[in-house]
Length: 233
Image 1: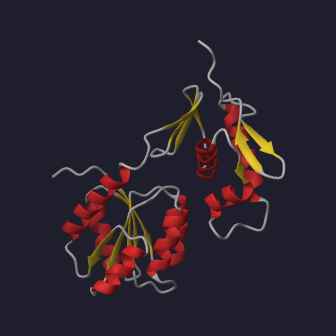
Image 2: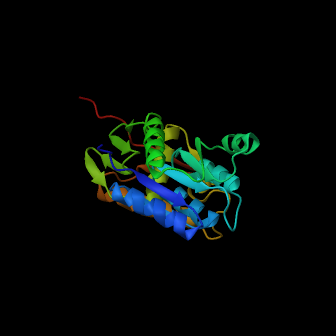
Image 3: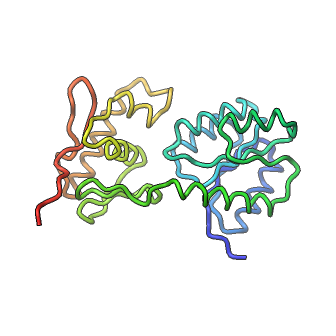
């Protein structure tokens, strides 16, 4: 049966189980990344655009439920989370769903069923992802992490895309610095003024695409889009 390729983050600290899952999904021509700790899982999930996160509850550094909550709060979009665990009591399953999990598989499991569940979750998740966001001549394609200005591609970094997406979602209103910092780094922003550097780089990228002065600085608040009106016919 033909399966469209998916992008999967496998969060599993047991090396044998992790290798079995990754090898099976790689055999389906899916894109897979692996994290053996909760901290690495959160870092990858909040910087990448995965179709599904396969998340083991028992991790060496963090509780899987805390990892799930962090991913749900900070990922660039609402990525479905499929929990993998040996806990099969109803109370454990309830805690998983209350913690944000979208589905639940108890070990041991059939890898073929795991793939089918991933496909179902990915389809469900894609229904909630807008195909595009348009503000005047600016078009953002969230699923592809791409932006166009008057049909000219804008070369964006991951951080630049997330900033631009937040500004488009709020337009014509401003977005505070604290909100943008949370979008990029969650509850642990860097000490340096990294946001200003990312906005500077984003402005340069937009300027190269023919969109100078697209981002306005609002003193003591943050940033907003301007000069995005549609030219009259």
